[in-house]
Image (spheres, rainbow, N blue to C red):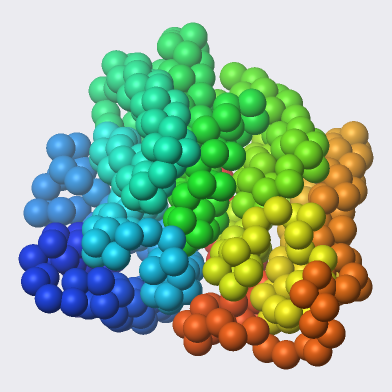
Length: 494
C-alpha cells in the first residue's frame, strides 16, 4: 500500500478538483476546508512515503504493469519524494493563508473555481516531479502552464488579463520549444522513457552530436522561459505582481522551481554529465545565470510596488540555482538544489507578508511602509527574516545557500563567480534593507507608537509564523534538507 502513496495523492488531488464544481451550497467555504484538509492528509501520506524510501530504497512504478518501453513510469526515489513532500507542505501553508486572504482578492463566485485550479496545478507539479518519461513530463507541463495562467487571470482586472495573456503566449513558445526538443531526442534514441533514452544516447551520442545539441538547446530554452531565466523572464513581473497573493506565492516559490527540476532531469537523467560537459552546455548556463543574478537585482532596485519588486527578485534568485547547476560538480549541484528549497521558503514568506500588508493596510507602495513594523510586528518580523535571508545574513537559510554556493564556485576554480555572488548579495541589500529599516525605525504615518500584534485573521497569522519559523529552522539546521540533497546529487551523478 505504501508503494502506491505517490499515485494515490495525485489521484486525490485531481478527483477533488473535479468534485468541487458539483458542490451546490456554501461552495466557497467547503472548497477552502476540503482543500486544506486534503493537503494536510497528503503531507502526512507523503511523509510516510518519504520514510519508506529512506528505509527500503528507491523504486520505479509502472502503471498497469506495462513495460517501460511503452508504459507510463514514475521514479520514486529519495529526492523526488522529498520534493513532492516539500511542494505539498508549502502549498498547505499558502492555502491556509488563502482561506482568509482570497476573499479580499477575488470575487466570491470565483473562489471554488480558484481551489479547483490550485489542486489541478498541484496535481501537475507532483506528476512532473515523479515522471520518468519525457512525453508525460510535457503533458504535465502543459497542464501546469494552463492552470498557472488561470490562477493569474481569475482576478478579473485588465492588468491581470494582460499579464495572463503575456504568460500564455510566452509559455506556449516555451512549450513548443520543449516539444520540438523531445521529438529530436526521440528521433535519435527511439525512446521516451528517460532511463532507456539515457542508455541509448550514451552509446550513440558521438554519431549525432549536432542533433543532441540542437535538441538540448530547444528544451533548455523552453524550460528557461518557463523558469523565468534572464533575459527570458519578461512574463514574470506582471504575472507575479498582479496575481492574487496566494497565486504569487505558488508561482514564485513552487511553479518556477518545478521547471528547474525538469532541467536537472534533462541534463542528468537523460543526457548525463559527461555529454553535457562535452557539448559545452555549462558555459552557456553560467553566463545567463550570472547575468540574471545581477540584472534581476538591478531591476528590483527600481521598483516601488512591493510585489513587483519581489517578482524581479525571483529572477535574480533563479540565477543562483542555475549557477550551482552550471558548475557540474557535486558541491555545485547540492548548492543549487538547496537554494531551490531555501528560496521557496523565503519567497513564500515575503509574498505572504506583502499580502498581509495589502490586506491590513491596503498599501503596495514601498514608500508608504514607514513605521509599519510598529503596526504589523509579526508580518514585518517574518518579512525581515526572509529579506535578511535573501541578502545572506548568518542564521538564515539564504546565508547557508550562498555559503554552499561560494564554496562550490571556489572548489570549481571559479573565483570570478564568487565576486558575482557577493555583488548580487550587495544589490539585494540595497533594496531589501531600506524596507526593513524604515518599517521598524521610522515613525508610522498613522502616528500610532504602540506596538501590538496586528488584527489579522488567525489562519494568516499561523501561515506567517510557520513559514518564518521554517526559514530559521533550515538556516540553523541546514542538514535537515542537505541530507536529502546529497542523496539527490548521488542519484543525478550515478
